Image 1 (spheres, rainbow, N blue to C red):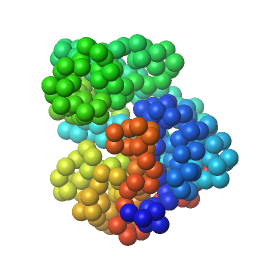
Image 2 (cartoon, rainbow, N blue to C red):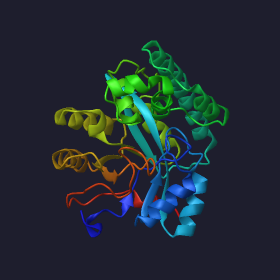
Image 3 (spheres, one colour):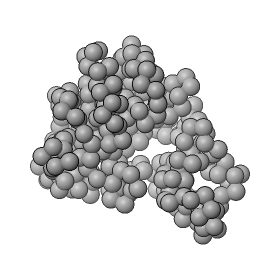
Image 4 (tube, rainbow, N blue to C red):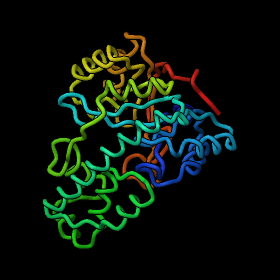
Length: 294
């Protein structure tokens, strides 16, 4: 894909305030260097990095959407992600709601850490404790790294052909895997309501990452639309042309936004390591640009 063919918007990225490896300013700098003109910092269940990202975006001369990515539950689906774009990140009620969501997330992380150990994995809890002491969230990537980097697990990692912490995460910490444990809140509807109360637009992120069958994705879009959803991330780094078309058609038929991202987590991430690494397949996006701030 030529540089001219790549989108200049990238509406998911993550910093050290959640499961990224770079601070917000460095994320923005890399995005600008990659040619991103419209960026969103979407750390999980927090907006603590938004102000730093806004300052960096002003210096870099790009536009930034204040945002956050909320992990939700919906019936049989255990980890759907809803991004809030254009939220008021200074809204105290919203920040309190995010703190409650993070508390549930932290409890789940503890349950998954215990489950990994029950399945014979040694964990380096030092890094996890340091993150907790610094007030930073602990997500599944941090748990996977704590297991993958522990010297006692070297033989097992080789035996199970786990190339990096990402493959360990997929083997043990996704829905249906041995050490996965479900969150208890929020539901998709609760996440949408919280985002709306903060003045934002709620978008279902990477639908085919969490739901396999096209008909199930289309049905979920219809159901979430009835709950107030504002858009769907139709364009995503792992979406095929067919998946993109399915999500796009279902969203546009309902007048919803259609966003996209490469979901940057850091330059050394096994999958999400570069900006603008996704395709629109010549389909025109509908972005929340009216909510853009600089």
